[in-house]
Length: 348
Image 1 (cartoon, rainbow, N blue to C red):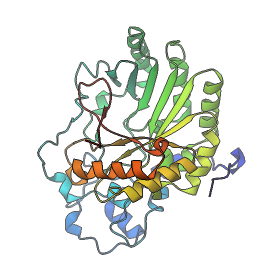
Image 2: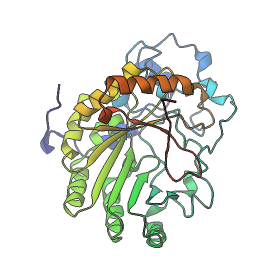
Image 3: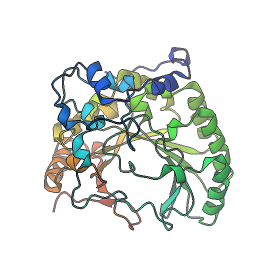
Image 4: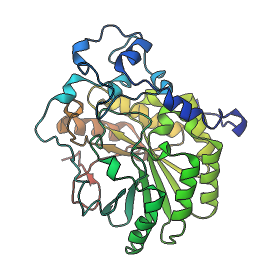
C-alpha cells in the first residue's frame, strides 16, 4: 500500500523524539524482557554487562516495537544486541579500518576530507541507536565534533578547495542535533557559495520517525527554495525496519529533498536476495531509491557480521536478475586512500 501523506497537525509534539531517546533501552536484559525473550543463552551476552562500557546498548522503543516478540533471531534485534563474541579478535579487523583518524584525512576537529568534491562533518557523536556493526564504534568523538565555534574554521578550510561543492553531515547521527542547532549550521554553510548540496547520513527517522518535526521540514523547505539541494541518505538494512510511521514522516519531506538509502550486508540479518529485493521494492514504495549496499567495514568487534565475498556476489547477481536497474544498490566497499567508494564487480 502506498503511504498516505499526513499533515503537520498529525505530527506528535516536536520534542517527542527527544523523549523517546531519553527513554531508550540501555540494558540488554530490559530489551529482551520487553520482547518476552527468555531462551537467549546469557553466556552469549556481554558478561556482567556494564553500562559504562565504551559502546553500550541504546535501543529506542519505536525501533524495539518493530521487532518480533519471542524471537531471539529477529533481524532487527541482532543488529543491536551486545554479544560476547564482540570481545574476540579476528584477522584483518581493526579499530580504524577506514584510516579516518589521521592528520591527512582528518585535518580539523569534526572534518573528514577523503574525496575531491565533498567533505564530511561529524556533527555529533550521538546516535539514535547503537548498531553493533558500526564502523565508527571506536571513533574519538570527544576530539572530533566541531561545535558552532569551530565550524567557521571548517568553512575557511573548504574555501581553499573550490572543487568541494557538497557537505555531508554525519556523526554519530546529524539528526541527533536539535533543529535550532541544525538551522544555525545551515546558515553558516550558506555563506559558502561553492556549496550546492547538503547531504545527511542518518538512521534517525528509521529508529524514531517522530524526528521529522515541523521545524525540520521547514528547514528543508526553505533551503530547497533558496536553491540549496538537500539529500537524505537513510540507513535501512531490513524491510521490517520500514514502518507506517516512517512512511508518513517521509511523505512530509519528500517534496523538498532527495531520498536515498544505504544498506550494510550483514550475516544472518539481510544476507539473502529475497530480503534485499523486498527492501528495495518497499523503499521505492516509500519514495526512497536504493543507493549503496556496503560490504562490511572491518572494525574490531564486528567479524560475526561478515558475509563471505563469494556469497555476497551471488546475492547481488540475483538482485540484477530480479529487479530493474534503478532498484539495485551499488555494491561497494570503502578502501582507505581511494578517491571514491570502490565498486565490487559481481560478474567476474
